[in-house]
Image (cartoon, rainbow, N blue to C red; front, side):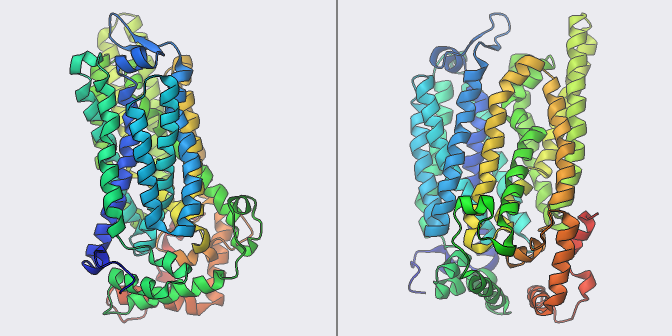
Amino acid sequence: MEKISKWNVVHRYQEKKLLWVINGLAGLSIFFFGYDQGMMGGVNNSPNYYHDTMKFGYSDPQSGSPVITDSLLQGGIVSVYYLGTLVGCLVGGWFGDKYGRIKSIALGAAWAVFGACLQCSAQNATWMIFARLINGWGTGILNAIVPVYATETAEYTSRGQFIALEFTLNIFGVVVAYWLEYGCSFYMDGASSFSWRFPIAFQIIPLLFLLAIVWFFPESPRWLAKVGREDEARYILGRLRGEENGVAQAEYDDVMAVVQLEHNATQQTYLHMLFGVGEGKLHIARRVQLVIWLQIIQEWVGIAGVTVYAPTIFRIAGISNKDSQWISGLNDITYMFATLICVFTLDRIGRRWTLYWGAVAQGIALFLAGGLSRVGQDARDAGDLHKATLAGNGAVFFVYAYTFVFGATWLTVPWIYPAEIFPLHVRAKGNAWGVFGWSIGNGWLTLLCPVMFNAIGEKTLYVFGASNFIGLAMVWAFYPESSQRTLEEMDMLFASDSWFVWDAEAEFRRQIEANPELEHMKRGRRDIEHGSEKDQSPTTDSSTEPAEKGGV
């Protein structure tokens, strides 16, 4: 293929090996995302940072714990990053649909490098606020594009597995950030700016590597088909799926059929998508609302507070400042290994059931963590140190349990769902709306968390616990199953005029029955992929199984 550079990895690798290489590129970007998120937890505990440079607190003379005098400034510095991601994701979505996924990844990496350089050289709070804003812009571009790139190249039967693997690297980034900062905190007991400047600067390394290698990766075949570069799209699909069994040609035919259907679609801006202008039966505005609120709820189920303010939670439970830091670091390690559970379950039990069991377990864990924290504080005030220690250890256990379950469930689904459910012609913009919701949820909470913990202490965990059960009801009612369905089937899944899942599933089945050739094409693809020529009954089709499990 002369139009594709001879140095492109698509010529060297094919099928599973090529998928793993692409997943590695996406994972590198997600690693940076995790590192950048986890970084501020340790930065906020550096005395040179909060006292000498940003001037919003001081160290307690007895315990050495940070005493925050301006929690609004502390939360504002953290949360302004999410204002940057909010703007960046909208830029990234537009850029990605217009100029492609690869150029968008390069743009996001370059912009994030610029922001990281400004952050690690910050001299005061104003400087840091603007640096965080710029760094967030680059992260927003990457977050809008990378999940789309991953889902558009993965096989529909294993999209969840690939995204889940990438988010294992995301939490690995959190782990690296935390332990790097923990080690740096011992340098001059945190009195040197090195303890927080070096960890911020460290993120530049994976970003530069990402910027250097992304040019050697293939463009999304679906984007290529959309812009009329059919030969390149067909070649890349052939390398991704193999040419021996006809899978690549079958998938290419599906993609081109959708491209033809969407060819005369109304040009969709972000405002068109938000308000449903010219959407017809696609119901794009509904999908926008679903992905925004799924990401907001993901933050309100507690992870935004637990990730950044875990040391604060442990101090509330009576753990010393130094102990709370290494306990938080171990919590991040269990969090990382928990994401591997999702790798094996997400495509098997579906998106809905993954969110169901996660919400129930997380809610219970947070209520128990909050209750035991209160018991520990009361016991310590009464002089019963033995009871206080037992209760504090119990609170730590349930925080660990919470993050473990979150890593296995709610971490991944709100990121893959927006990348799956939008039509091809607005897929990057659609995923950007998901990042938009994540930015609102995260920014809102990181601004409120220090205020909430200062005002109501462990009761903050009760608020998060209750949010899990609200999220459970929302998913049950409004979010249809996307697992084991091709990207090209999503328009049928959202064809119903009703918001409710049961109506969406009924309309999907009606359209399948009215257009049996669509089902035959999918079954043919699946049979080819599994090397099977035997016919299968429609009642056992995996495209409807997850939805029936998750239905009413």
